Image 1: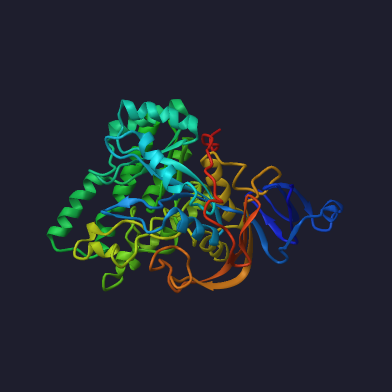
Image 2: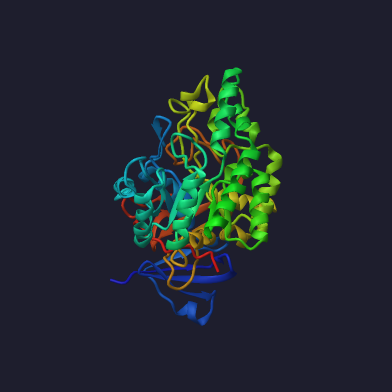
Length: 467
């Protein structure tokens, strides 16, 4: 049975266009667009019609950086694939790309299979995986080729976290050389972890144990230095590079300089770096622990450089790095020692709304909002045009967005499985009203109608951002 849905009366916004158009959906895909009241639009009939008058009709968000159920610091991220993807849907995100983790000394395949098993049958929206390389050796390098063929086309390496995920420059170079030949994209956590560990040790020895020192020891210059080094290693390898969660003005400058040379170097930032700062890390009474993530929050003056980078396309993507830990019982593991606070913030539900607020605040255009939140992440990670746009043949991942509704962000009302909001009490304008995933209603006028298991695993092509 063919099922058709018609979305009438809205302003369709993609990265390329803003058009007053009706959208016809058939069998889970966009079938056609036509101007309001045109002969074509008037000729359409459907089993279900959605009225989008005075609303935006936008592609479902693509969050290319989430960590559901991630083991970290003796605990686990508090969102499961079920709770995390449900929260994503509430926030207008219809595809996540999560990170499968290789256990040191074990095969990539073993880690990937473990993540397939965690997510299988649990997700409310579609999902894909990157692979974290914890152990670069001849075996894992060969496995990279096989994973690219399977649709796992990006690999994350860490210059941070010695003894956990850390890779040295030689390992990084080998992985980059491999990606240059197999088409994979290396994603880099760029912080000089060896130097940071020295500063951590010195701070704790001096009695500086509060959460705010997490930000002080993870110096902006050590993010910039690692970003510079990663870029040079990628140049030597002849490989493209994607730097995750860029937070410092000096790191943006390194990316911009590389891109000015025409190098295939890309960067993402996250809402926390655009809207929060070291002021939050310094909140009294251990409250600052809620804001501990890596790279860390920076002083507020770094935000202007991040917004500028998003406007000039020196930063291409805004992802969340959603990695929630409850304040009670998880963040509290670091009382008396900031280095034991689990690193990560909740945010998968807030990204689309915060970026819409950025449009109202004059930081971004509406089309750039959709570009950095939907189209560019889809292109960067081989999901476009199946995801990230509204065009004939694309998956009908579509959000009806009310640009006039006002809301207050709060742990009382969010759907992430975490006991605090990083944006508690923040008033914003704009709210997701209805969400379709592959043509199925998962959120209908602010009522969740989705289910665990609707979301399907989505293999990816190699990056479409080159050339």
